[in-house]
Length: 564
Image (cartoon, rainbow, N blue to C red; front, side, top):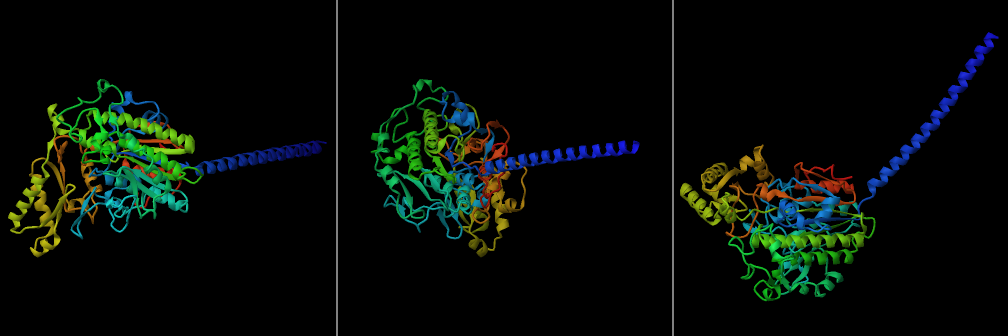
């Protein structure tokens, strides 16, 4: 009896253990099912790319244009991007010179001039001894004009863009279109494999053009836009958007620190009359309406190219150039600059609304940044007892060449001085039996004694040294071993080589490097950060969002806090 009870107890325990094991197995299967379901969901999310990526570049936009004019902006432009997107408040260029062509190249390649090779808006080519413009190419023909303004391609860009990588990843089904008033603002962002790049040709024509690098003839939608009269519709008065007396965030309407537009420097500007002057349709470049024309064309491109109409990601790059022309002409503290940004805010709102309608709200991703910032007019700074001044590059060239000639009893040892760089004539050095290193040290010594030059760097220092300060690091990042010169110099803060009116850029200082960086739309988190980030981080971040290869020479980091 006792034996039976014990055996019975064992049987009961055995069946209970089987039941528990069965439950555990069922539970495990359910959990596995949940895991698979979650994995499938994650996989779906990973591949749910935006239908369109729009890269907006605002030429010469300082970060503080966001904060200075914040209370004057509407709710649907800059405020929408920041309120619903991710605002990186401490974004900087990590190289010099901070110019338009290198800026656009760096944004979309994720690297610096050291690797993408665009070391200036133009630069001295050592092999030919000529000045080259990095988008000019006589091997291609103009489309839309009989003039040479269309002979453009990304000829000197050594690296791929994220648009190129998206074309590769989609078997060239995803489109890439570049748009700007400036040729370099359209060509360099679009990259090598773009379907098209379009830029504005002023003069007597006032229309968007392209080159045979991209296509054999302009699409019908471009021809239709050029003949639509939309550009001519802006031949009217450019007056302030709001009463001028309310523009308290900028200086007086007419000052000695700003230039003039064909003889005029106060609102309103009669553009129909000014167009008849020497600028022709080019007058739009120096007004807020240049950005409106760019927006009109971008909207036409959305429709004409059917961008974002399927599940394969397209790329549209839009560079607003009028801000740069206005800044150069009138300065960063001018009424003209303020009105240009208030109107740009409306243009951005209009573009976002068109994207909502044509692509679908929540189906596209946007980033907005700048190709460089800009300095306050030094003569204005001086009037407020703030350091700044003017460096006469012409005198510097003359003084340096004279010094070298007297030192070595030979002429033409210096071949070129441009983009803050001195280029040697190597054949002449060899003929005179002068070593490059000796010459570098002599020029370096001269520069360090020269007024208004803060720092100098020889090729030897740049190629073989390491820098622990931001200025030195930015010089190194802007130095391309084959294309750059032999000695580079940096001016003192707020010292510029420019007329005594209007703003410019090019230095490694924060007033030229600190720019906006805002991400918005599909796959983007909401938030803000004051962590320092670099301009070269944009392309890797967009590439990571799309799940594609990074551009070929990318050195930036993925901004993991930005993407969802």
